[in-house]
Length: 262
Image (cartoon, rainbow, N blue to C red; front, side, top):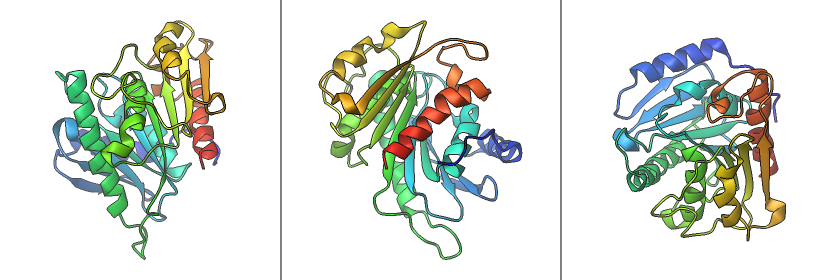
């Protein structure tokens, strides 16, 4: 694992400009000299894929956004770090439109992930146009609603024909069940590592997940309470920040999970 660093401002400015002007059709652009950002599809199926330019990735991160925050613009620094620091390909599905129902969001998630992961598998890297490994170690991270949907993906990945995640990082998961494939209908694989981070002001939000994960091996799950302190208020928007406190709390935890899942 490379050291966690602050975002490269020049690269992020370019990435932000790409997102601001991105078309809804498939579109590949160079985000910086070492990160490529591809915008694929439209509507709820729109998906952003971030790829290293030179070397094939050694892992895949699926990043699931919180409710009503369906573009990667607020987490560009984190995504940039995951591609550069952890050498991962990254898939960020939109999955949600303004009037999406939970079932429609789940359908968009499945379609966006399928398209994004196929795009990663077809990509070429460097002068020699190398492919990524046929099977990439996969980690899914989600915030809020995405933190709940991460379990829907993990529980259904094999049936959907998608990579079964080696690890789940669920950050401030939303309450309630996800219809059509959430925690009430299937279990996640027992070998999948799980980290659930909840804020000290809303620890009850994870009560349903604690019950759902009760049969999961104790050695493969951890619940962590994030406490508010100077520089960090333990609310759903905290992972979107790039303060030292936020980076050390959320970025470092995900880095460690990626490293342990190898």
